[in-house]
Image (cartoon, rainbow, N blue to C red; front, side, top):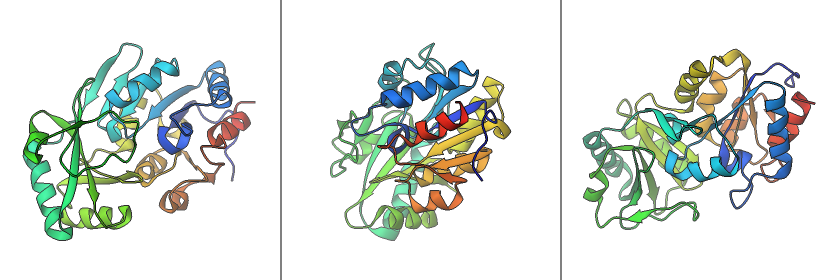
Length: 269
C-alpha cells in the first residue's frame, strides 16, 4: 500500500544511490521536492554511511542546516552549528582483532578506516582501493598506521570475494564483537557493536522531537535495512539491493530518475 499524504513529519534519506545522482549531484527536482517538505512543516534528515568529513561539503551545497546521521549511525552531526553532537568510536584493539578473525576465514583483506571527529581522515593501508573515486583519502604505509587515532569504522575489500560473500563471512567470523554492514559496491564495513543507521536515526529523531511512527525512510543498500525496520515506511530505489527491496514498503524510481522526488511530490503536493 502506498504511503499517504501528510502522514510523515520526518523524511530520512540516504545519499549515495538514493538522493544523489551520478557525480554527487542533487537535482533541481529533488531540491524542489525537499523545499515542499520544509514548506509543509516536515523535516528532512540525511542518514548516510559517509562520516562527517566526507559529507560536510555536500550539506553546504544543499544549504542543509539540520541534524545529519553520519558514519553508518556512529555520528550525529549538527550542520548548522558545524558540530558533532554525538559520536561512537570503535575500539582499536578490537578492530585489529576483528580483521584477524576475518582473514582467518577468507584470507587476506585490505582495510581502510574513517577517523573519528569532524576533520578525521580516511586512511587506507597498501592494497586498498577506493570504491568511490570522489572520496578524499590518505595512503598509510602499513596496517599498524590505521590505529594511530580513534576511528568510527573499518572498511574492507577482498581481491576475489563478492561484497555479499565477504559480508556474510565477516558476520560469521566476528559475531558479537562488531557490527558488519554492506553499504555499497565495494563497501563492507565494521562498526561498534549495536551501531547502525536505525540507532543513529532514533537518537537524532529524539533530539528533533520526532518518532518512528511519523518517519518515512529512503535507501538503496543493506545498510538501510535497520532504518527501514525502525521507520513507519521504507522506500527502496529501483537500483536498490535485493535485500533492501525485500523489506521495503514501496519501490520507487532509481536515484538517477529522481525516485525520492517522485514520492515526495505525491506526499507533499
